[in-house]
Image (cartoon, rainbow, N blue to C red):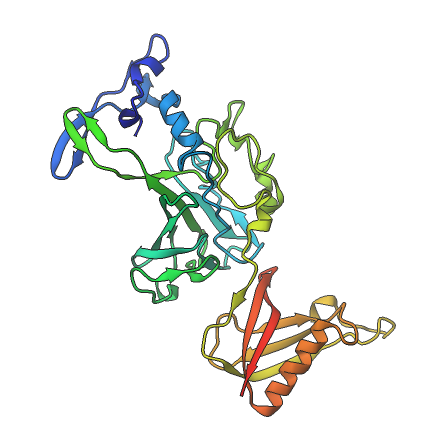
Length: 359
């Protein structure tokens, strides 16, 4: 892209250094050579700084500072940054290309649902990857990429299907090191390189707006954004993005406010197969149950993920909305009515926000 935008690698080269050798590229069956933006010292390769033209493109990849308006591709705040692929450059070495952000559950054996980060249509899917196509507010296309999904969990959408922001796509595969690799791509310019016509191609960009500023020069293990100390990766959602001089493409800052508001159980409406009530009726009761048991639990027929849904009751008072929903669900269970639930993950548990009932 730098060559297509008109940047000259020789002008970016440090004094006394040599560019790496040209490498072969292949476009539409035609092989050609081009110059990478890199130099070497005693056999070790280093990236050149970003040129002015590429810098302008990265400042405003959609034009006029337009943001992608992304929300986080999951529902729960029980997420941490990946151990190795936390950001655009891997934490395990200085120059490793990563081109995405890894999100993983806080518990090593856990998993989590993955959802669309913006309204879009299904462009492609494979055994473990889904790609969505979106339009920005100024009508430019970009892609979001969701990798390392459990194949059996991917929703059976057809190509071209409209998927709404926050709609479930699938679930990450379980196991040690399991994570979501999230990427964002948009088209770069077309042009000519070494007498070969290069069409518009998709290029991965960093939605945090960090490229040449990604590393702390005094500490190769830390970054200058999100958060101050990435060893505290567990709470990264509550930190504001900092240090970026380029467009930040998330809807809000800090990111915790970019979690989707809620989910709906899938159609059709379903009968309730089981309920369980654990209520703290009076704070003066001796031997009262712990707070996590002050809940009303609901199991739906034919729904195994999530296994159950809950309404917190610790702070519920007479005629509160929580107790009203409990009454509706109890009546539905006793009379065989079918329901649909709106819910949100709180600490990885699905809390009921609203109830719909039909006969």
